[in-house]
Image 1 (cartoon, rainbow, N blue to C red):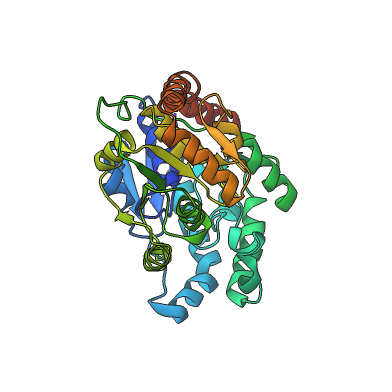
Image 2 (image 1 turned 90 degrees about the horizontal axis):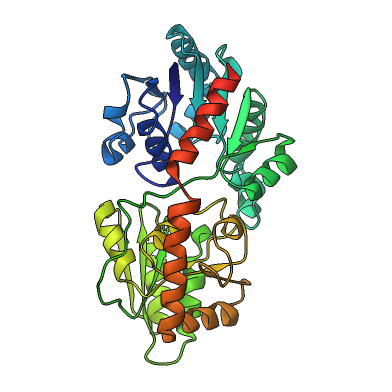
Length: 371
């Protein structure tokens, strides 16, 4: 069959990874890529070779606040034009990924071809406290919210990656989403016979919502010798603030930005424990990546972590309280037998429960069913 794909993705992160893993596992179909911007995500994760063609329709606008507002005002027209280009290619169905501007993309109301929208999360700037406190007063956010709500209702089908996110989409938009769990590449992410550091690793964008500050606060309460903290982030501007916060607590913090995937794998393999403390995490690939390398995981008992981590089986989950989280980190760091048990169970879970092949087949079924 012939499928079109819409994306407006950042340079890296969860959504481009999902797209790459799905498309490369379904080579029996023809895939054609459409994007409203010139994104570097394709080159970074090797998407270009997976598509039969690539069509770019840059959005008008410019830099700064004025350019941002101009792009927002012209989104319906831009969406109509790109939808026409997609329909003209006569695909059997369209896989639509999120828009950087409005979450549910501007092409959805104008597509004549049946669409499956992958909704990894709602428009968090409009619906998540405390993110909404300042954003709600912004005309820009209100415009995003109106367009996002209109667009998601135009999708023929909606899919997401966790029951937690499906419940949020139903509550916020009144939309029922099919759950297709994500996976992990157990061939690229493997255990290594190396000495692990006395270190806590936190992975995610350098943004307050990823909970890196909470991890730093928890580690700062541990007894000496306290482990160091490493944060790996592909994007975001929160690095300097995190460094200042760690210095004030007398904690050693290393921040690694946009490093190659092979280097990320090596850090997983060598760290003592991976801490997952993102606020309202919709799914969370980082715990699965850690588990695939037999690295123990400690996570807050929230969001998608409840579906990926089985408490005291292949990881530990705790309430979002600094003393509780710190105690869980200390258990893993100071008890090598516990760390080995959780790591071995995590690897087994990654191999048996979290397959990208299963994800790709789930997306394929939705696309075929939508025709």
